[in-house]
Length: 338
Ligand code: TRP
Image 1 (cartoon, protein in one colour):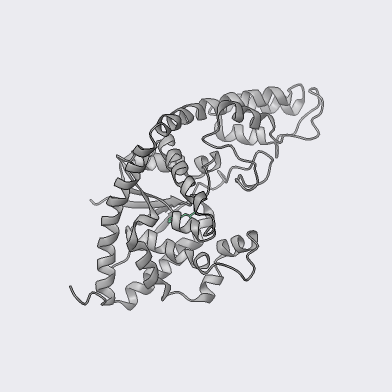
Image 2: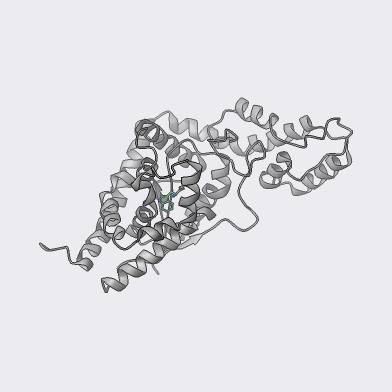
């Protein structure tokens, strides 16, 4: 039986944080290690450039940070093909053919892109490449004939758009060339990890993130600054656990569930101080993040080796994408000289 094919990726616009870890990286490593899939992991530098065209340095620097984060959490180039979008020219050509199958009004309906346009205050000055990035994402996915795409909930519209393009393409050009992908989403309720400040989203722009690369002191400082219960002033006061980030994080990161139940009870009755629970959370996080940080530092000692890894992965990915492009060209009929 042929293996199922996974493709997923990240925009390199900064280092990855523990929200990425909980929301996707952990699951990717498990899927990779199951041996059941052919896994492609893409660093989407071209997609990152669609709204950072004037800051290419940021993308260049983030590329290596993201690669280090991948290696640190256990993505393994011996098991997964880790590659760089810009090094796969076939993706840009596929994008060009797919753009003809999509209307401007369809693109305008994409809720994730709409939200990003509002958040970035683009108003009418949206870069055209940014506006059409869901189409380029369809190229990323279909180039590898991926049937499974593990991503966050916000990526569902991209998958819907990809399936529409696949159906149009196969019906117009009369060949079963492209494969319809399914999204693989985080289990309901596991939700997204909120920020240190209690904001629903952990993100670099909000300054409320713990990075996989943070050293032990930084981690501790961040944990000690976390949003808890603003009305829990004296240790003996009863405290609230809803919306209290320390307990939200303990629920997610502490495998000793019984201990968490006890701490919650104690906190709600009163007599358990914030400093104490924060110190405990710090220990829990340090136990998880310490080994990741150490592996990251090990890989960071040899950056040329990391580039070599990306280059080898990109060569491998390139062969696969070129094969799909040849089929696409043949289906459209622009293979005049074959
Ligand atoms: N849009 C994704 C993100 O912002 C990154 C991405 C680019 C991607 N191409 C992809 C994800 C293809 C899955 C499949 O995180």
